[in-house]
Length: 325
Image 1 (cartoon, one colour):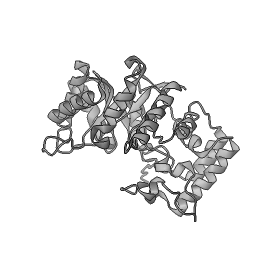
Image 2 (tube, one colour):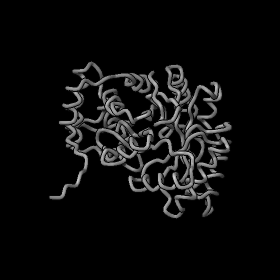
Image 3 (tube, helix red, strand yellow):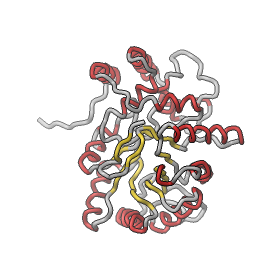
Image 4 (tube, helix red, strand yellow):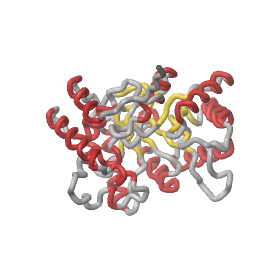
């Protein structure tokens, strides 16, 4: 396993991280499989484990903490997030000072930890002044309850720039990391967000790197959906919206490149994200140990320049630039 700094901070995380978004805790057998997967990850050098207070109503945090308690706290990097409702009260949601502090205390209790390494704003909260949110997070760094903070999706370039202005004005601890969606089929952060992160030394820890399973190659054009796959049961249907003929044609061509390189599409897709130095770690999900073992192979996998050129040709992406005259 290889490690990278989170932005310009001194914190080092494994190139492959394990996230808890899709952790299946419905019965004892699934819980044991999830625990085995986390242990296998740690044994293979993964030190970064991502969670959120909104995952399974806090149960995901409690589960992750129960497994990680067997390892030295100094050997792991743990993150969680705040924004979504944790109760029925009007103040049990968002990014107010009250909700952040109360939600963090709940997360720490759930995980059985004294501090979190990384703490993200799970969404943007238009109902709370950004200054209040950022000053609260910086204050929690002063208290040692969190070591670094950042934001997840939906902040956008303009909000990140405004955040930097507030941080400079009030001499706050810097924003260290963002966690957006990023994969071969969704490259919106390359329009401006990636450049802003490079400018300010903010690390990027993308989620959904395999496009909800599209980039595993298990979905085939003209074939039935695989039994038990996410596309057969996921409520928000994100993967179903990605299963277009155009995308499936791209997947077929990308699989051919992976075979030429002696690997598979999942490894290629993860290594493709890691081609960018501003990427600190890729947050992966794994419901089976075999999936995790395959994902680990992406750390250190170098895609030759000729193959990268072919991939760009297949994806057909152009970062937005407006030219006048």
